[in-house]
Image 1 (cartoon, one colour):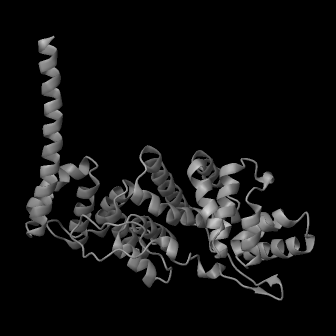
Image 2 (cartoon, helix red, strand yellow):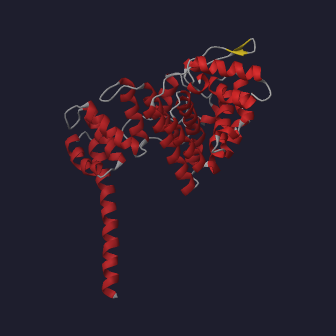
Image 3 (cartoon, one colour):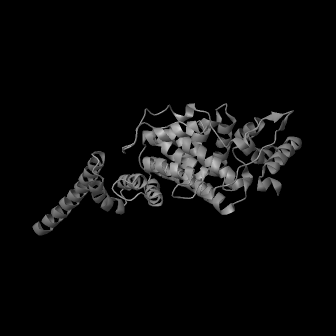
Length: 340
């Protein structure tokens, strides 16, 4: 028995020592990087990066992007940033977003880059929030905190709930003479849509495990992005991906339905449309049940293009003329379901 206890104690101590050693190795690597000892930093950080340490992966990415301690290589830098971003590192998400938007070392995609910026901003990455603002998207940081990396930082912007909800400019619309003005839906970027869905799932899982205040602040921001991507998925009729979105909403209905209730009280048509969508996806496995109609109709009446299709289905029983106007407008904008 004593021998077993000694073995158990030694194993526990060994695990703690290894964890402490990993922390020390990262700290030593970061210290060496900041001191300009890049070759030494690379040697210390690479083993951690290969073991999926998101912080180390991000720093290795910086070294390849800038050619510090290693030959400059944008493709390798983007690969390391991608690994860090997938593990939820806000700095990695921001760095990868810049490369994706510019098409350096990876496939150029403005949609995917914006999705990554939104993920980083929701975690309080100030440069991501600032870049979104410069791009005219009006996004603001949702959580306090900054980066753990040697990049310049600034004070986080106010809560995203105080900011206008921004969507693709091509989809903006107003009503004229009681009828919806022309609009065009932007093309679907499937990878950006899946990234948005994964980000919301990850955040909701964190909230389910522990009621984290910062995570809760980021929830409205990611819910908006989730909705924006779902509308694109729905508009082109991508049924498998739409079903994945619906499963995510149903799985986390306990968190999303109250959020939708808060958003439905907003005067912004986009927020009302998000509320209708969330209630419909989370509470109605059969879309024919059309739950969330009041918020969807309010958004459609305000001229919000993404609400036209479902708004038409909601109101068809009592006002076929308005429903026809909305359905035709959605069809002209490129909504596959409305066209059908």
